[in-house]
Amino acid sequence: MNQSLRIIPSPTDPDFGPDGGGAAQQRGRLGALLLGAGQITPSALRLALVHQAESGAPLGMILCQNGDIDENTLYNTLAAQFGAIRIDPADYPVNTALIEQIGAQFCAVHGVLPIAKAGATAVVTTSDPGRFHMIRPILEQELGPVSMVVSSQSELYAALLTTRKRALARNAERRTKSTESCRTLSGKRLVWGGGGLCVLLCLALLIMPIVTLSALTVLALAILAINTVFAVSMAAIWLLRRGRITEPIAQTCRIVPVSVMVPLFREKHIAKCLIQRLSRLNYPPEQLEILLVVEEDDAITQATLAQCTLPATMRTLIVPRGQVQTKPRALNYALDFCRGHIVGVYDAEDAPDPDQIRAAVAQFQRAPPVVACLQGRLDYYNPRKNWMARCFTIEYATWFRIMLPGMAHLGLALPLGGTTLFFRKSALISLGGWDSHNVTEDADLGLRLARRGYRTDLLDSVTLEEANCHPWPWVRQRSRWIKGYAMTYFVHMRNPVTLYRDLGGRGFWGMQLLFLGSLLGVLTAPLLWAFVLILFGLPHPWTAQMSGSLGTVLSWSLGGAALIHWSVWILGAYAKGDRGLMAWAPTLSIYHALATAAALKAAFEIMTKPFFWDKTMHGHLSETPSPAKETLT
Image 1: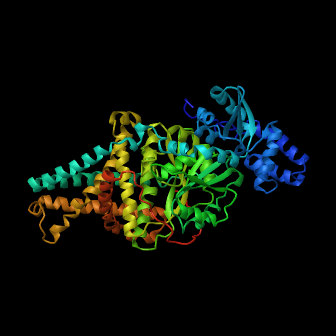
Image 2: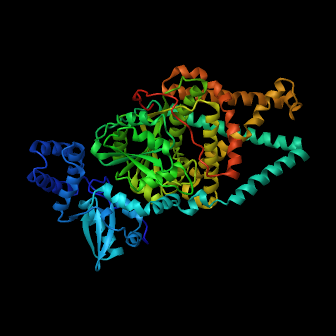
Image 3: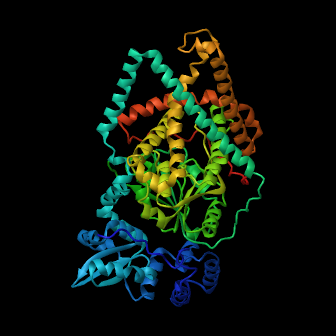
């Protein structure tokens, strides 16, 4: 298909209208046909109509969810309702040439599949005959005259994937524009640039060790000062705004279809708990689908899910093998199979608030169309597992309660977290989905949303996760984050002028502060720790200078910076409402020392395997209670 993918709104799309007439027609005809054929009882129809009035879901889907009819009966009756033939595409040879004319992605998104040519007419099957008239003009533009037949969704997808799953997988890998993706970063430049910088630094240390170390120390002090001012500013914004009365979460909303994607990889221990947690989501099941996205070669997770009885809202989607194996690639592949107008993302270890979907839908309905994404808060259900878990919890409490709200208040681009995200599907597809080669696809997507003029708002709802509380898994996870931040920075800074124009002055400098400031802060931190050598009488390039007024100024400055950061972390624990964690906040200075080891690992991987996804293992805990509701303060 030559033109870019278009998303055709359905009558229940919040951007289209409250009904559009389709639901009324279906109530009047489908129910009558089923009742007349003796497929349902009058009481079953009345109950389904009551559910439809509450949820706005298609009547046939409600009847299937209630167990009144099966899928085959539904689609046979839909075919009769629309005067079409009911077929199973598996009974016909797949015409790949016709599929390529409109594109496999278009077929997946809109639930259509061209079967054959009957003279000049193309026979196209659909799983949603009520919307076929909206797609027909596009089909006829590419295929000529078309004739509609009806298949079930599962039959249609099975036929499509028989021959086109590799094409869909390739599209998932290259969905983002090349100019916005790190896949087009030159590997040679990364290697030569990184290696050359290391060589120059080593030569400078050999030739002018004192001058080089002094210059790097001044840089480290400058970065510390900037990051400290930024942290103080975010804390001040929180303190000034905390007294305001926030609007309560609206639990009443117009029900629209919602899809949730959960990418899984080698999840042997967490899958069963995940199913239990997601089953608690309080949203009409006929308007909610949960896609458990599993890699084709992940036999562990597939076997685990095969032993589970999935609720009617959940189904497994297998992602074909490809050139890379990353979470964003899996999300891109699954996105085409989502029927919801709002698309959410959870991680394998998540335990979301049961009312979270309703809260997200309600907030989208109150928000202007420019709001394309909602970011929920993340917390941890094992904060007292050990010291690292406490520090991880304080760090996230500070990020999601102090830093992100302050950045949102200033209108800066928000680097998204990888989970508890909700998107308008139309905006996400127009953006090109996720960069499948970026190992921090969430932070990159937040920047790309801002560059396109979209806004990300914060969702007043909490998802509990499992804190990464063991040193080596923590370093591996943090190295992936640091590597992704660096790759994201390289991608968006390829053309600084365009970036400045897209984000504006405030957004541009905010991006520099967040990405470059955090990266350089981690890399230069050891130069600040080196001042401890002076306390123990060990050699340091600045030993002589520290005995005078400069030493006094530096000592007070370093001590003051440490106190400020401790105070901000304490404030984060206080904002979370867990005062027991506040006493542990100063120990984050030790905790963050591990980040330098992660940064060195990340720097090595940027030059050797930039797209390698270092998997974070989960499943150290058993089933946990659902999270308690919190109020944004």
